[in-house]
Amino acid sequence: MNYTKRRALVSVLLGTGALSFGLASQTLAQSATARSKETIGGGSVLSPAVGPAPAYGIGGPGMTLVKNWHFGTGGTIKNYADMSANFYYHDQFGTNNNGGKYGANTVSPDFENATGGQATEGKDTPPVRKFLADSLRTFLVPIGKVAKVQVWNHNTGNGSFMAKWRLPHGGSLLGRDIVWETRVRYVTPPYYWFALWTAGNKWKWDGQAQGAEHDLVEGFGYDNGGGNTNYDGRYWHSNTVASPTKDTVNYGSWGTAMEKQGIKSFDGTQYHIWTWVYKKDNTFAMYMDGIKIQSGSNYYWTFGNTAKDEPIDMDFLFDASWGHNQIGSVNKELTASAFDGKYYEWNYSRVYLGANGENNPTKPVVLPGIVPAHKNMKVLAPTSGRYSFRFKVVPSASGSTFHVEDENGANLTGTVSAPKGGGKSIWITAPSAGTLSAGPHLLKWVYDNGEFNFHSSLIVSKVPGIGATFVRTDTKTQGSWKGLYGADGFLIAGDDTHQPAYGTVSKTGWQVNWSGNGLTKDIRALERNSGGADRMAGQWGTSDKSYDIDCSFKDAAIHRVALYGLDWDLNGRSEDIQVIDAATGGVLDTQDLNTYVSGKYLIWNVQGHVIFRVVSTSRWTNPALSGIFFDPAEKGAKR
Image (cartoon, rainbow, N blue to C red; front, side, top):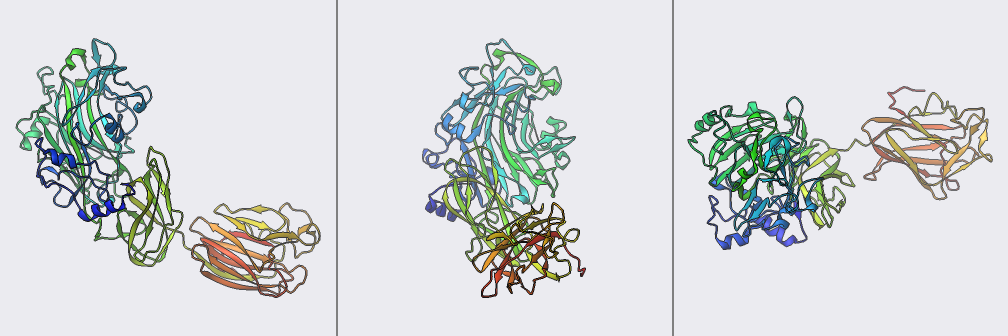
């Protein structure tokens, strides 16, 4: 989503739902008035575009236009500045020929937008793109002054492109229906390669396709016999890639399959509207001029294509290429002049999202889980506790801040800052975790300042439980702690510090040694970690009446924490030890520490981020402790 400071405008857009002119289909007869009102859109239901509704009513009522790439000097993508702001001149892997497979390399309009070593227009090739009044025309051209072009030499340039806007997830993970519609025509040479496709951002081949891919249309000069006679754009297919067994139509025999769908003839030189529908119930369908040409179900937009796999993002790619060096029938050679008068022509491409759950969600997301991040988000917390939030954003030029509130207006996340800059999307963890009671909640996304590109999903996780259960006291061990305490870590006043691997411990106040340098053979003093006959008599204290020992345990496990108190100088000390929830300030447990001239351990089982607050209860003395020790949780054993 792209949010700006125009909050009033956002409010207006939120109230309008799907903004459209109510056109059943898109034609070149759009009025100049309607065209002048078109916008590109921010990319979400919260930040929609202005433009026509889906052609043929595909997608049903309530679809919101979130991206409107209308090419041509009279559209929304008028020139190279608009083009470069909205599209890359490479594929989702940053390569300019789909990993070296395509016979043609995508050409960049200038050096500033080129990837390493990429050919640029005017320098390495003739013009590759031309903006007409109502379209963008892209050409196939030789790279360099060559008389012949070969697929295997990649010495052909093309005008392919990929949207910079990326849709997070799909199907049930996004929680809404998607409609992607493109109007295009092509006048192609032999061995052309035309495709409209969307692929997961982590796509790879590992014995099977991982990362999800749908080819809305793919054509590459199908040869149905007769000596390579039919490379004229009449044949194409439409399919999924990661799980082709889910496809209803088998395009193994392309011409026959098209006929089964009622398509007796096809002229690629005329404009056609290609539409892809991917629904929140994980079903999909593909259309050509309103005719269903492919469909299926149970397709998961995840890395691995099962419901439990990692969610992945969705890229939109526009291939206007030539040849393929892995397919024999299109791994060919042509004279450079064979490209004369050949082109692909793009009228528009638009993405719509269903209004499902945007401002009136009907089905809550059970936490922890992935929540579509909209203005209002209905969730269900199975148990009370603290929950953390992670947001996916694309850094913008100005940076931004936002937060999430509950239905009562309580800030659950603190102020979340999206960084300045640009480039790839990143995950940001909210600085604070919020407390939710068990039951349903309506979370509210609140924009604060700046602008940023915000992917419309977030991850809400349960923070490890917070708790403290007092186990027992120990007055027998005194300072001989080795072998009994500190297996996971310890802090000894005046001696060594070994932080536990599962967290960090810090304290306020000061530290001093008794008996000069603190070294003594008195059994009440704690054994030194380095060994030897001497022990360490030290104390942590404060000139005030209390100090804190902050124990931040990052895991979900329960750990034993033992505090050792020693009233070394027989000063009649007494104090309370409070165990406090670091997030809420609530007191989880309180124990008295008094009569400890001989040394005394107070032992708890602790989980999560807690603070031990040592509070003096005597009038004249400071609160004092000599050590803290960390071990696996105690199972009820007594000493």
